[in-house]
Length: 476
Image (cartoon, rainbow, N blue to C red; front, side, top):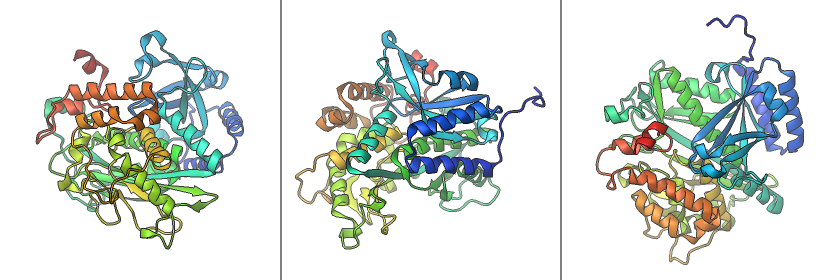
């Protein structure tokens, strides 16, 4: 079909970067929500080349959902957008299905037209219950409220950055076809840092990095990872809600770029046995008045007592929140000590088998790195559980807590049991959302072999929360 008569927005990458960085600066400066709202609505009204607004939100398991609203309709009705919550796993029951979407205008993104389509912009939405209150299973809203409360009460800014690993596999929809093929095919076998210019993995990394740069990610470095056909594309620190949003965008961009190349970007934690899995190392710090509260030049490993208290609480609740950080059957294959697995409930500056690592830092970059996070976890749950546990959790009276011989679960069943019996997870999520989440994980586990074994089973891929299709689940 010809596009000659169409005049939809399609901006060069440098203009996109400028727009997205300006929006990012507004978020960092905490410009008043009503001012940003007025600016965005005026922009949408005046920019005739925009046809639709893609509104993004995530379900309880972290699966990203997108709704396209006609621009003219949204400008008039942005405060009265409804959708059927009963169709979203972990949201409402059918008898009480109506939910609303509210725009978080500060999380507004301009995307490249060659990746997202011309004439579109993206904005993250907040899920609102029937009575107008924030919806309890919308963890993005829970995280945002917590971060805002910390800033209001303590003047804390919660900061995070993630190192998200993935695999690039041959063929489109390789995960959906795993039941037939029983394997994933590499596109590159070069290994760590090695990929020749022009090969499929390098072209994928370059293209993805270009898209991220245009969307204001402020890239740092990118490279092939340790395993064959594995990649990592790093970008800068951000305020915690924006950082979690960027995880969702990162995976969306990777999947879209790969699909356009006829390939698959895969974020299963351990899609191939015998090589390193995918992690999502989560670097966190807290600042106040521009000062990094985790830094102390005279402290142990140059960390402040405040930071070490944060670490101690994370270690205390490690088993409680393991299911939130490792949310799938497949995730427990990654917690294998033969492949630098961070399955030891310890803190160390040197031991990469420790759940928490203390990277080399300075006054600006001092942070702690939670290494036991899988890339298929709900990023909002990851951030919320880490920060709330680190700030508000308990400290166990365990001798030598930071080096004690303790380990994370090696299977999802144990992780579910730990999660369900923990009083702390009830405080984190409330009983209703806690039970919903546990039930979702139990159903997924029950559809897979109880014993992991030595090769990846089709059900742990096909019934994965980021892979499943409606038809397959209904046939079970």
